[in-house]
Amino acid sequence: MITISSKANNGTLYHEAFHFVFKALFSPSEQLSILNEARIQYGDKSDYNLIESLAESFSTYMQNRNDNGLIAKIKSFFEDLILAIKSWFNIQPDIKYYFYKINKGEYANK
Image 1 (tube, rainbow, N blue to C red):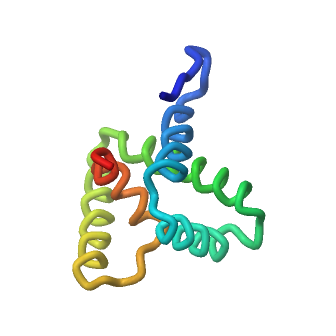
Image 2 (cartoon, rainbow, N blue to C red; image 1 turned 90 degrees about the horizontal axis):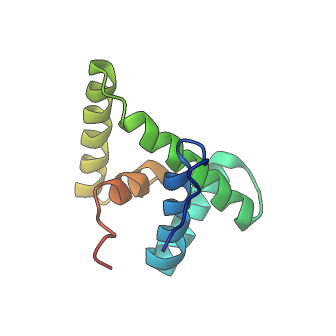
């Protein structure tokens, strides 16, 4: 269970949800894959700092996806399309692919 203070910043729930998914629901190979991708994107940091960077990025990703503006909806549509195509052709998943899978609930039944 994740407990969040009523005084927490916007996005804190998404940040903490990422930690839960990473620790409890990602397979070891998924953890390794996303950490390797994070090292490329964020630099050679400790695993702890990489996971913190990923959690913050997931929070930002989710807050941007919740934007109800037309431009945001169009952008999200094309990002989802690109991620779906990568998935169909088994292209190496990137960080946003994992964020997409979390958002779509693919880890909800693990």
